[in-house]
Image (tube, rainbow, N blue to C red; front, side, top):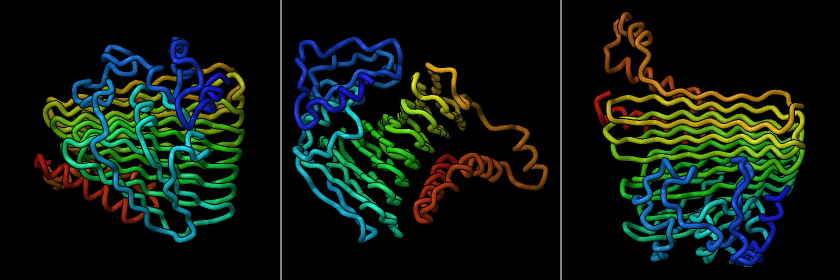
Length: 397
């Protein structure tokens, strides 16, 4: 696989290839994307490119063109199970970059700009009984910071890790999530920034043989949050559930882009994201790509996106993509929808004496409830339920 070669070259510094020759046009496939650790290998996006056409470029605040120099730092706090190892390492650590290489200019800028990284390791044969919480505080209003975080579950280990983003600032970062052979890794990522914050985050998940990976993303706060999530199956038998919820208010832009890269046989993936929008200029974008490569026989995959538009002036874009290079698969499919309240549901509830406003709340809670119930950390689930209730109350829903 060409991409895996790129991911292992020069990962602790600049790309070892000649930057004058590294900006090779990508293949027509949306799955086989060009990657590099060198910022110079990527052209500055203008907003017309396929990967950027939904993103308001001016609101990136210079993350995309190199003008956003680091003026602050991220404050990272880790708490939870004592069996888990936490390290702060410099750029020379050989583990960094093993989950995947940057696929766009902002990710490459974040890679070249961070000075130290946090590595959270669940040791081999360890079952962490308590969740591990990694709280990342932004650099502060109008300040810019770049970061790097790796969560690594060694063979036969098991853990639940919560990544909690808070605060203000302009943030570009890379997150690595590595589930080695027969590991079971669950990661919950919460983007709950202050209203002024901008974040562009690239998540790289890598699954070893028979690894089980569960990922839940929740985007609630911030002015602009764009998250790119790629799951790479590094060996046969990998199993991934990638779930997410988002709630965009007036003026917010929340964007999620996913790629399930099935390069190995007999692997399974399921993607389900649900979003709600309310208020003028509320905007959500969901792009779901699934690539089943020729060697990935026996693949089973499905992706689903649902969007509920609560008020006039809100807009949701949903684009599922499925690319299959072999006919020997167990099953593959995708679906997406954008709609308003189901009048029949509202009528049913009102006919039983439930007031209109309360009926609307029940419909929205039910819309998200299917996914929220899959969060195994009670405190996190209750926090997200309360946050959604607060969003609904903000417009008198």
